[in-house]
Image (cartoon, rainbow, N blue to C red; front, top):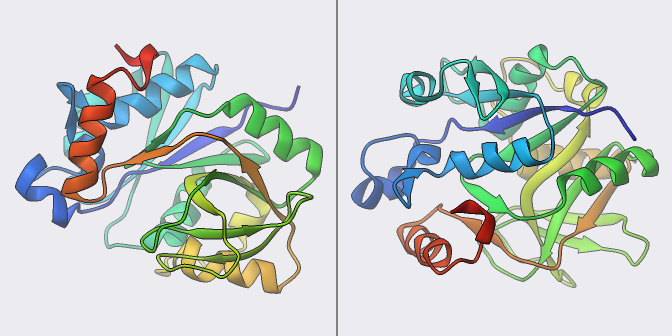
Length: 241
């Protein structure tokens, strides 16, 4: 079995569109079933025996820190605080300074996918890829569209727009080699999805897809937030009672 990687959860979003329904809190702290959405991710990581999580935080970061402190669900929690928004790539670059493992599992703090995280870690290690992106079937113009070859290689990626021949969406979860993340310029605002993934593909980096034949639940808009509440209430994720 490969080494259990440290985890970075990107939790710094303002959630501007969510304030009318979720209140003035960081998006991952929006309530689902009476508890913060990000608890779903932490409990998922606990089930798969992860041990160390770096929460990349920004907007109202003390709301998250004061709630979870330094330990939750048998996980050690560290914090990487953005003094100004760095984008997904910049936030990951700053957080990786606290990563001690050769690879890192990155998750978006406002989306949940009930995939086999151990399988993702193993697939990444076995393929010797630079990046392995969890993908789900679907097509939407406000998410990361992915074109996947039959051998699992990703050949095109575009954030928040459709791509010709795309049958998959990014689930907001990926494995990345720490050395690659460390090459990102520090303290620079940059998008993982819009800039770095296309740059890495163009530069010949190996980026592979890990297919999960399920769905990704995210709370990025009031409509999807309400949908997430309904799905969870109706038992879509039976182990989150």
